[in-house]
Image (cartoon, rainbow, N blue to C red; front, top):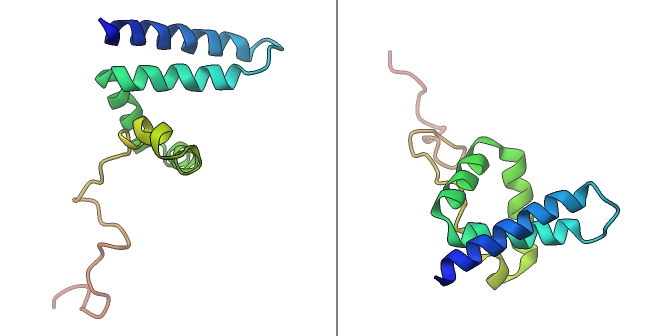
Length: 106
């Protein structure tokens, strides 16, 4: 029951935050962030969608990581749970083979 109340309240704050962005009412971004955090905490679907978004949009992921660092341990926990899962099939600079080995075999 508490999960449903939190989800409804978070959704309401999310909509209120979006509406207040178009008006001169201050604090719209704060209300939007609180509502999004509540929805992400209570909905696996919303967390999965955010994880997918962060995977496909590197610049947005970099901004979200920047916010995670500045929010503190407790407040950033929901966002840390939506970090993209690294794909082991895609080589990264840290996982590239030893540069001293030949690139191709004769």
